[in-house]
Length: 105
Image 1 (tube, rainbow, N blue to C red):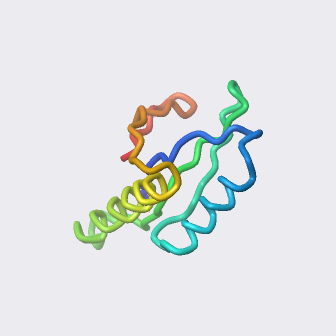
Image 2 (cartoon, one colour):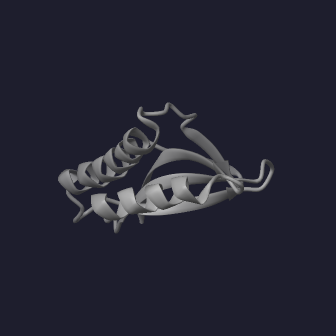
Image 3 (cartoon, one colour):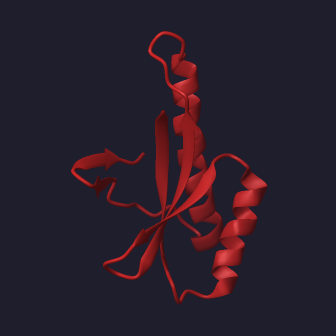
């Protein structure tokens, strides 16, 4: 499984419901990637990501499929950021998950 994710940004548990509703409505309109909330327990925030998954096989997966998965996640996240906050937010793209680092586009 190839998982491509792009950060949208943090949502505090106390953020207003209107902002979260706007994010969900925008995501539904885009229909490009999954919306994923990863709980960041140390700060009480949820980190939102746009994510696509691709069944990856070295013999059958085409490079165009990989490019499409990456583009779907990144353009979905960027568009949500642009529509909700008025600009694309730059994020730290490295997340430590367990004992491994993951890179998010």
